[in-house]
Image 1: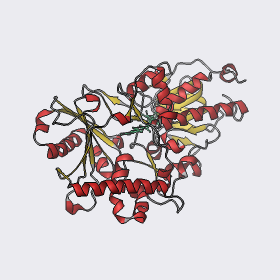
Image 2: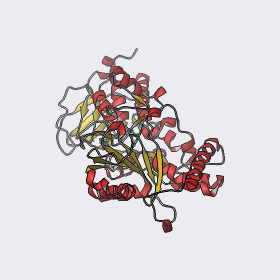
Image 3: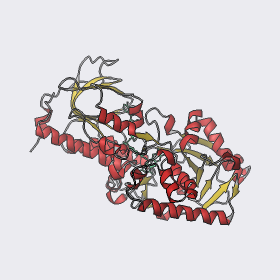
Image 4: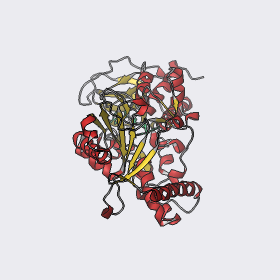
Amino acid sequence: MITRRAFSAGTVAAPAVLGLNGRAEAQSSIDIAIIGAGAAGLMAGHRAREKGFKARIFEARSRVGGRIFTDDSLGAGYEAGAFYIHFAERNPWREVAEAQKVPLVDDNTLWGGFNVFREGKPIPPEERSRRRGAFGQLSAAVEQQGGGGDFSFEEAARRLAPDLVEAAQSLTLLSLGEDPDKVSIRDYQQLDSGDDLVVPSGYGHLAERYAQGLDIRLNTPVTAIDARADALRITTAAGDVLARAVIVTVPVGVLQREAIRFAPALPPATLGAINGLGMGALTKVALKFDGNRFGQSPWTQFFDQGGAADKGRPDDLVNFEFWPFDRNIVVAMFGGNYARALAAKGERAAVETILARLAAIIGPDVRKAFGGGRLAGWSADPFAAGSYSIARPGEAAARAALEAPVHGRIYFAGEANAGSASMTAGGASLAGRRAVDEIIRGFAAGGRKGI
Ligand SMILES: Cc1cc2nc3c(=O)[nH]c(=O)nc-3n(C[C@H](O)[C@H](O)[C@H](O)COP(=O)(O)OP(=O)(O)OC[C@H]3O[C@@H](n4cnc5c(N)ncnc54)[C@H](O)[C@@H]3O)c2cc1C
């Protein structure tokens, strides 16, 4: 049996915060360095600890949770990132919540009705039923469509029936944050579904509590990983650390921007996998109101199709959800280039634009009752670079390719390479655990020399 003593032998008890500018004055050595304290990093940290290994998590932000974040700054919390515990049957976050005795609610109970608007007006009933029919047809057909190559979601919809392309756009923009021509149909088809649960007290708060007790260095971005010597050298804003293995959980968009330098350079297969993926831009704006509920009950949704009639196929769809958990908040969600442009303009402009869209539907009471807004603009966030990964058309194999370790000791783990659970917090966590288990197997096999 592998013992902690065997693998931590020779580790130096050194101060965690070392010299600046990457010049370590003293060096700290650990078994496993974990880059990022999101779902994958936290789950990996726990797994390593359970197995008796010394792991340390380096997080660029001043908080843990990554893209799981409950924003309470409006006084009433809303989930700026992940909301659902998807496929709860096998999602580790359900177990975490149960262990913490945190109540969970079945998503099926959160229904308040659905209304569709265009240019501020409800769409006519016949258009509404046509639309509903198109969605049903599209979902069923996409599920069934096997073989035939790996083309875009848009192409798949067009092959089924040209009038399904509009439904495809609504579906991918609001579920993946991306236009259907940029999404692989094969990748979409391989995704899991199952029972969804939600965390009324906050998914982000659950993650914060789960992080307690782990060795986490906040405000510590990692800028380089050097694998040229026996020990991996991890360069952080607080100095260098030596590790036997590293798990990189930063989003693929962050990797594409080369925020972390690798020496030697990553092999072509890994680079190809990273570049075969993209980042959607699912974005939220939360609007707070003074208690006026505008006649809407909690969980009612208003889907605003957006776009002037002469603009062609609009991409500025916005879905409003009213009063989640009976809070005086409306959460708007949108994606694609419309979201990227709004996020780039910043919070003030984005909140104003979305408020104006809601006011166009409901009327001037919206502005009278408005009490502040927040933008969760993940595409403009340097530590996220988007909402979650999508596989580009023809690149459905990229996620699996990103599972292969590099130089036997650099592992990538996160929502991007979580197989059929990809894109989700649950999948990211499973990928984090998997990476630790593989590293430990590698240690046991003695594949790499220790530090
Ligand atoms: C709007 C939105 C809605 C979503 N809805 C859901 C949902 O309902 N259900 C669901 O399951 N999933 C949802 N997701 C997706 C889910 O949030 C992610 O799949 C999951 O949280 C990703 O976890 P991760 O650990 O892979 O990455 P992250 O959570 O991004 O963690 C990576 C961490 O690395 C840090 N980092 C980045 N660069 C560096 C660096 N150089 N050095 C050190 N640290 C760095 C980041 O700050 C971050 O904390 C949603 C996401 C968004 C944006």
